[in-house]
Amino acid sequence: MKLPQIVLFILFMGCSGLICDRGLSLGDLQGVLLDFFSCLGMSKLHFKPAYNPYTEPSMEIFGLKEMG
Image (cartoon, rainbow, N blue to C red):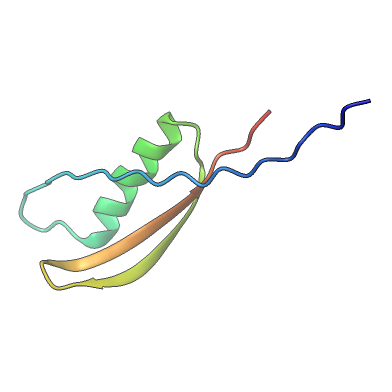
C-alpha cells in the first residue's frame, strides 16, 4: 500500500503598482490591496512595515489562501 506524501509549497509572487492623488494615505493603499487580494481568494492578510530604501513607506504583505 502506497502512503500519500505531504508536500508543502511556498509561493512567492511580486506585484507592483502606482496610485497618485492628493490626500491619499497608506490606509488607502491597504484598502486597494485588500480588494485586490480578495479577488484572488485571499482574505486573511497581514501587513508588516518594511524598510526598502527605494520606496518609502514600504510594507510586506502576507496572505493565506484556504485550500479545499
